[in-house]
Length: 152
Image (cartoon, rainbow, N blue to C red; front, side, top):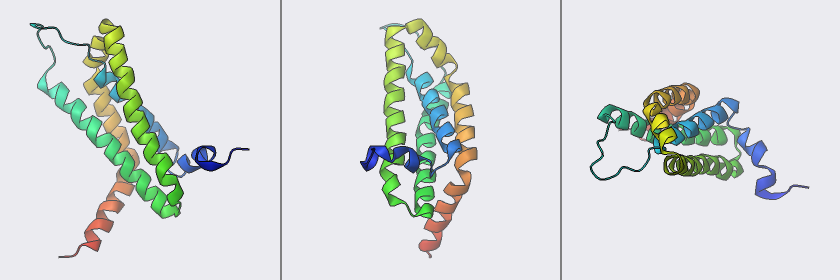
C-alpha cells in the first residue's frame, strides 16, 4: 500500500500530460549536452562561439520556466493543488540531475563531453521549440490571467 506523497506522484504527474513529460525529458537531455563541457586548461583556446553559449543558456533558462508555468496552470485548472509539489519537484530534479550527469560526463570522458557540447546548440533549439509547442497554450493563458487581473 503506497500512501502519502510518493505513492501518488505518478497520478499527480499525469495531470500535466504525457507531452509535458516528454518535453521535460527532452529539456533534461539538452541540459546534459550543455553541461558536458570538459574543464578548460590555462592557455587552451575556446572553440565555442558566443552564439552557441547564448542559445544553450537561453534554452536552459526558458525551458524549465515554461514547463513550470504549464504545470502550474494545469494543476490550477484541475484543482489539484496537492500535485504542485510533485510537478515542481520533477522540474527541479531534472535540472539538478541533468547538470550533474553532464558535469560527470565532461569530467570523466572529456572527448565525449566536447562532442556533446558541440551539438548542444542544435539540441537546445529543438528542445526549446518542442517545449514551446507543448506549453504555449497554458503559458498564454497564464499571461492573459495575469494581465486581466492587473488592469491599468
